[in-house]
Length: 464
Image 1 (tube, rainbow, N blue to C red):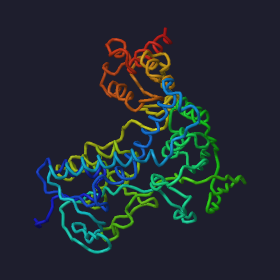
Image 2 (cartoon, rainbow, N blue to C red):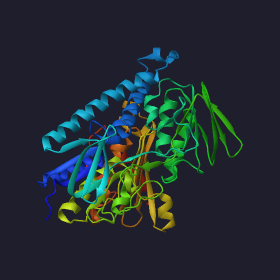
Image 3 (cartoon, helix red, strand yellow):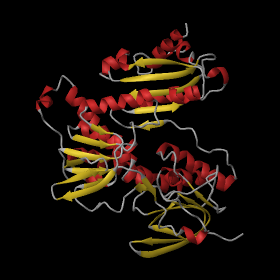
Image 4 (cartoon, one colour):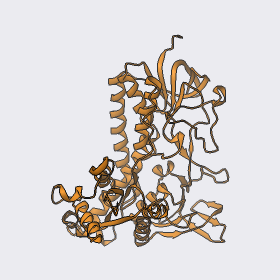
């Protein structure tokens, strides 16, 4: 066998790359990570999930303070500045980088700073600051380079009033009015964040409803709450052109509408970071969005090269990426292809947030599955009343005959935490997967978990 420097090299230090590297270390392999950022964490830590969720948390804290009757002085029209909220973002990023750096030191993972590209299927070139700094060899290679916002060529993203989901984290001013083009997950998250700060938001949706992959009732709820926050939502609109000037922008739509604002945030899709990898040298082709095709073991068409995370497309979630990285390392080291990640909860960090797992009512109706619905409104829970979390709902879909849980959908504060209780029961086998669990077992009181008991009684009472 050739004497490679490393058993495994991972390109990218985000959630997928980190979990792959650490898993390989646990199997006593020689491991290295290459990343084009000087400090670890990948796009997730530096420009994606972590900073956007830290920003959302800061906005939520501001809202709680503003809505608390103990602090009426903030109701006199005082506005928080966007730049002040970004200080919290910077602090969280520093903590994440420090923690992840300790991971690599403790596990003896070699970290290379630079941009990686293939020389052959076992050789990589690393360029840092425009210069070749290293060439390394590895038995197996995992591509975990993440993604970046899609940028159409006819939009000038260098303009001071034009942003994407990366650069918006460095916006140097607080706009009075903001256009967000694209009403997917990222667009909706930022629409709720900025509207909560009192900024007028025009949300441009190319489809007929918001987040149409969600249960219809949940989709309607986020639509209502955004409208209530002052967001103007424009459905079935298509980009035509963008005019920019020193003090603002004008978005022209195919429908003939022209919308003016202080700035625009473009949130219409993402592109896999694969264009600099020199994939042609190893016979791998990316699709038009820079994504790679893999099998159930995250193996590409080249036997020793794997891909995980955003570069393989769906579900493009940090939560799934961690498991994908572990699965790819297991395939490379053990030949184990049994851990394909295909069932994950949805977490959308709007204000209020959304989370779901399993089937929607539309899907169950189309499949002609007899089901019933149990609902609990947060305003009817003791914890919701105590904490002021009156907005929100938990919804359980269960089989009308055997009472097995088919789907759980939650809208409201802490929805992404609450969902895991339902997920855990739904994943049980046989009779253990039953809505009766929430009636036959005792939960702490008062907690938001009380919503499961209320929803269970509500649903079962419909059957009587």
